Image (cartoon, rainbow, N blue to C red; front, side, top):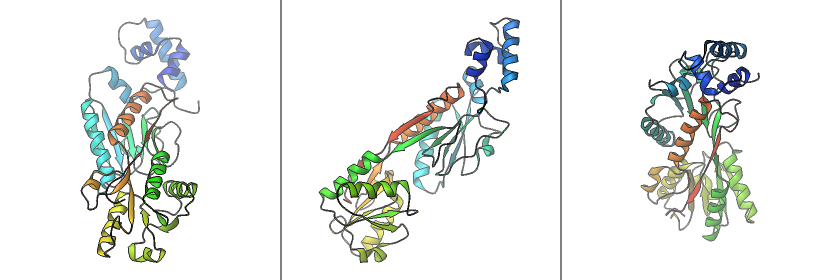
Length: 304
């Protein structure tokens, strides 16, 4: 097989139900010795190893979720981590948390892993082939991993049309790497409306951008948006009168800066809930549709 065997595979080979496989693997009552032997033989043939999380679904012991997150000093990751901790606690799960590393760092003590790092996670360790792994907004698809994908296209178009309705004609799109998906999406959305944006590196501040005479700045994320608001205030540039500013991420603190930052926001409770649901699906062998999509929405505030 090109992927680790699941309980579904064992049930098919043994000609029994998933519940019967569970009973056989955990030496539970309710099946005959012959059926148990047939199931165990199928498991050996397929090199099937029950996931720790899967065992937790039928035993009362608490499950432990490993959470890999990006830099916790960045409120974007901290807000998501806080939401996962809350929702996992409501389900009775324990959570161990670590900053970026490989999935192998958590396989010894975690029954499942959720990763939200901005990086692609390594495959599970060889000794844990059935470890459920879910990635949030991953840069690429990792076979065998569940994933929560972000949809920004609609919110991006809404933000661009909002800016154009406010008279914007010389937007600058600040891009972290110069070629990021979100930067390209904003540039394409402006072009679709007949306006050619000016691309710029994210490290540029207002003094560097002033020569472009922009009337709007699209920051790579909310943190960069806050920095721009600070630079503009220091330079005496009125926001939104002279320059409008939009961020991406929808950080809660955006409501408390002056002016309040317009942004592409996302419901982190929906994101965390989707990731936790995928963990359960993967632990039950349902990997064929282990994808959820959560959409951003444009939130217009005082900065535009």
